[in-house]
Image (spheres, helix red, strand yellow):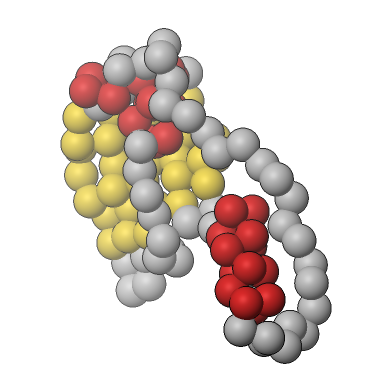
Length: 106
C-alpha cells in the first residue's frame, strides 16, 4: 500500500478482514513508527514563497527560510501525496525538501 500505510491503518484493515471473514494474500505487518512532529524550534511562518519551477513531468515549489529549523518546521507540515511534486526550502544551511517519500536534504 506504500510508505503512507501506517500501522494504525493496518490494524483497522486487519480488524475489518477478520470481522467480514476476508481472505488476505499475506499478513505483513508494517513497522510501528513515530511520525515526525512539528518542531518547536522553528517557525513555519518565516518561510516565504520564491517561485514555481516546472518541466514536462515534475513541479518544484521553491521557498526560502532564514534557518534550517524554520524550513524543517514548514516541511513537517506539508502533505504531499503525488509523485514528482517537490517542496524545496532554501536556507543558509543548505536546501531541504519534501516529496511523497518524506523530508530530505539536497
